[in-house]
Structure formats: C-alpha cells, structure tokens
Amino acid sequence: MRPTLRQLEYIVAVHQLGNFSLAAEMLNVSQPSLSSQIAAVEADFGVRLFKRGRGGAQATAKGLECVHRARRILAEMETLRGVMTSALPFGGRLRLGVLPSIGPYLLPQVMRSLHDALPDLRVIVREENTLSLDEGIRNGRFDAIISTPEDHPNTWQHPLFDEALWVAVAPDHPIAKLDRVGAADLAGQRLLTLDTGHRLARIVYGLAGASGGIVSDDYEGTSLDSILLMAATGAGVAVLPDLFARRQAVHREEVAVRPLEMPDANRGISLMFSREGPFDESRDRLAKTVRHAASLLDLAVSDPK
Image 1 (cartoon, rainbow, N blue to C red):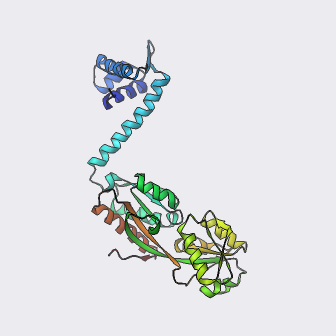
Image 2 (cartoon, rainbow, N blue to C red):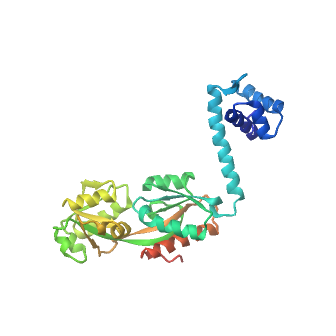
C-alpha cells in the first residue's frame, strides 16, 4: 500500500506544528483519524516517523526524510493541478532555455513583451550551452528553447531571426582602419571563436576556409567576453554575433568592432519545442512575441511563413 496524498499532508502538518492535536485541528479532521492514518503509513514503511511525548511530536531521522520528500510530492501535485486548470499557455509556467550568447541581450526585451501580452504567465529562464539545451528540450526540462536550429533536429521549429556576424580587433590592428571587413581582409588572419561545441565555432571554421583565415585550437574561448579580450591583446580577430557586437562590444574602448561582409557570415536563431508535446496556438503566439522583441532590437526577423 502506498501512502495517499492526504496521508502525506497529515505527516507534513504534524512535523510543522509538532503536535497531533493542532495538526488535526488545522486539517479539520479528528485526532484519532489523523493518528491512525499516520500509524498506517508507519506500518506500511516499517519505520517510526514521529516520537510522541508530553512535549508533542518530534520527527525521527526517517520521519524527517519522509517530510522532505512529501513536501516535494505535494508541491509537484499543486503544480500539476495548476497546469491542468490554468487557462494560460504552458499551464501558466513557461520553462525557457536560451543560448548564453543571446540571452542577456534578447531576453530583457522578450520578457517585457511577454509581460505586456500575458502578465500572469510565469517565465523561468536558464542560459545553457547547445548540448544542455538539446537534452533539456528532449527530457521535458524545458518547454521551449531559443537556439541554432541545426543543432536540434526533430523539434518543432519557429524561425525567429538571422544574426549577422562582426569582427573585433585590437585598435592597432590593420582591420581597425577599415569600415567593413570582407573575405580578403581575413586571409592569413587567426580567427578567434568559441570551442567546437558551439554552432558559432563551426560557422567560423567555414568562414576561415572561404577566406584563407586560420582557426587555432590554442585560441578557443569559453565565452564571447573571453574571445573579445583575446582580440584586445592582439591574439587575432574575434568573430562575434550581432547582438553581442552591437549591444556590448562596440562600447569597449580596447577593441575596434567592424561588420563582416561575407557569404554565410550569419547564424539563424529559432524557437523550438519538443515534437512529443501537443502543437497548439500558444507556440505560435510565443514565437510571434519573441519575433516582435527581436524586431525592436533591429534584428533581421524571419518571415513566419
């Protein structure tokens, strides 16, 4: 026999109040009924959950473990009830994963747009790398992710925008004298990018092949800030996505930032959902909201058609 949710509520209440009589009064049941239900759980588990004495009831070590887990179960049931009964999309709670190279620059505007459209929707955001985002959307940890679509096959994909690429160099680098940078300007240059676990790195390797540039494993960065700092020291040419370049890098005095004009010097960004979930209008509505936020940042928004 498994304990019922009601029995778990009794156990948590007794621990919280330290007294069987007070717990029974709070739950509007008789004390004998409450005591017998907890005794039934103890008999089923074969352990004692509470020490009873004149001073009240005190949880045993096993009892504390039971209380801890019971609280988690009851909280999950409350969440489930809210999801099932809420008229809001995503059951009133959206768990959104996003690439770190996008999140800090796009999400503030997205959150404002979502709040304007759905003020009662709770949004929980996590910034994670591509692999973690893919695992999260497949195991149900995320309701949606914002990432590069090539890295998440077999998902429902809503194109959001195309992000142009820029380069950053030390102020005394020859490229700093240019207004715009083309393939010929990158010939023989060391290109700085993130490690190969990122889609950006694979794009940069393609650009290096098309321009005669070099991507060295010795100069892989762990973040966009790190490759920007390497460029500032003269280590090479940092390749940066548009949002980071325009909203942060251009304001840094230690580097010169220039637009990159080459075929394929961009990356697509999409909103993605698991194919195992139901497809409903809330997904289109979310994609529309994110596209609107992107348009306010002067990004090249994708045609939803």
